[in-house]
Amino acid sequence: MKVAVVDIKGKNTGKKVELSDAIFGIEPNEHVIYLDVKQHLANRRQGTHKAKERADIIGSTRKIKKQKGTGTARAGSIKSPIFRGGGRAFGPRPRSYSFKLNKNTKKLARKSALSIAAKNNKIMVMESFDFEQPKTKEFQSILRSLDLDGKKSMFVMSGLNKNVYLSARNLPKVNIVTGTDLNTYSVMNAHKIVFIEQALEEFEANMNK
Image (cartoon, rainbow, N blue to C red; front, top):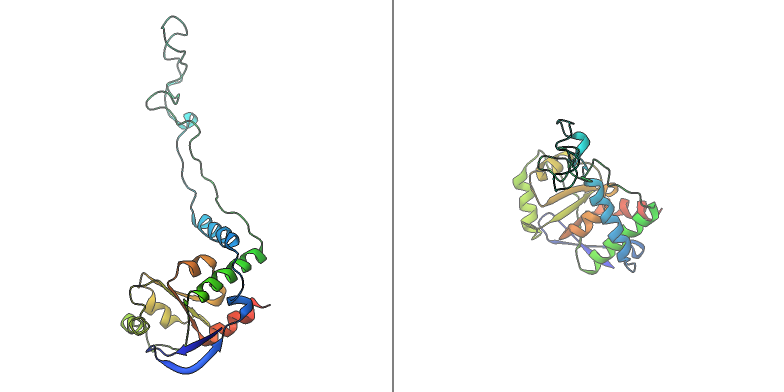
């Protein structure tokens, strides 16, 4: 599959790059996409939820009423979950939601997500660019030229470009990543994935190892 290379003004440069069929043209496996996205979202959870159980409640331990003759059920502690102010039964406790996935499974998930994106014309290749200093307005002009203003977009750079990163940092729907940071969730969540030409070559070389 060939994709035209555009410049920062969104105009065709006349060059075309061939997307690797081993990465952008496979038969997508939707189940591994689900697993990888599930793991990504699970790893983002803090898991700091905590409710007080009866052992955590501060209160008297005396028996609140006599055992028999009251006509109601027996009760031995004011901390019981059935009383107002008592502890919660089987309440949530701090825990980790993370789980492991095989490396090959994660790689297959990324390839599947990218293949779906390529099939839906969500992949764009762009010439390398840089800013002399961080300037959000300049980055916004690029977004407008690419018809991405107000849309979720991900720019895959060949390396950490500080000026470009700082220029896009305050834009809520723009994500600046390197090829090694590309994950299945970000690919599925983006309206358009813009590969810098050099970054695409490096990414394909890394994925084909």
